[in-house]
Length: 195
Length: 185
Image (tube, rainbow over all chains, first blue to last red; front, side, top):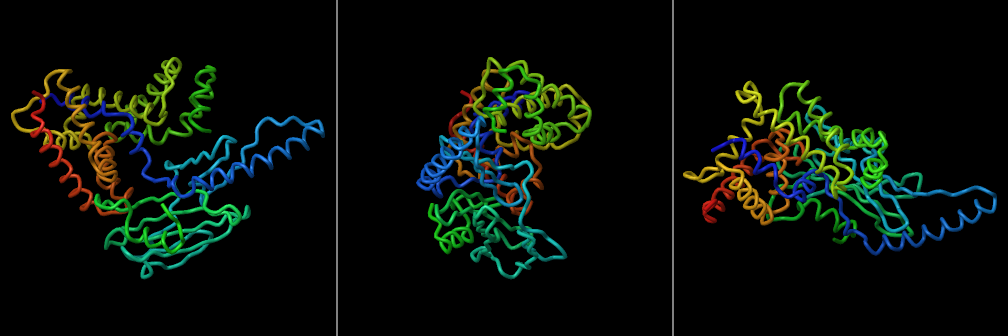
């Protein structure tokens, strides 16, 4: 066996697999495809009005890209005018959970909540807050296994007048027989998030 | 900045293209090379060479996935350097990755030519298509990105032991698949 050729054989696998595995975080585009259209229409009207006002004042409008941001700069959704463009910053992901002194702490939105005994493989911890733009951030945190480090999470963004926008999950289960772990499924059911 | 905008800068021959590429994918490119090479200097040279190759190949190329494109270039450069460097072969993470991969090749079968390597690639592509998303993620991260088991455990919120067991089962499955297919007859 020539190890160089073995390296090459694996190195040449389909680009789609490489792209898929580049993102350990999973964006959930199916949360709201209809909502995306709704949001787009509303934004286009708003932008048209703003552009008309600025043009009448002699100001040139080049491009306006309204952006919705997830917590910690992990997730951005930009309305490009032709649709929503989500970007997950997987290379600088800020986790919402911190392990300290053998306990798990939920640290989003300046919180410091001990969730060690509140989560399991079937039981999620749910939390929400509303940001300055009026976007509600819903969090689902759960366990993938018995050890302290086996936590995973999802963040889902919601606009009261427009419904669910998008969401993502990270550190989710390895079980090949399930698309998503039970804690996540339970959390999404409680929040009314459909796939 | 999104991928289309960065590729646009390459097409305009703006040096900002490389800066933006590095800003967005620099850490991933560096990690891909450092998973294979142990020398910091070798890693730095690989990263710089990968950017240069992007500069020289875009245009005419217009990759659909900029992340996969630049990481593939960095990986190829790092693997070439690994095989050229005798000292690297004696130790390191990538040696373990290759050892594990060799387990998947059924006994009595050798990959001795470029053509056989291509056939093996096609067989692995078919195998990956049939895996669950989670198993495919683990396989590609371990054997393409050469991530350590510890890193994979952190990425998936699991234990190193659980990841190792899962990888072992995937390798067994691949070995059986290759045996069944009679590769590379």
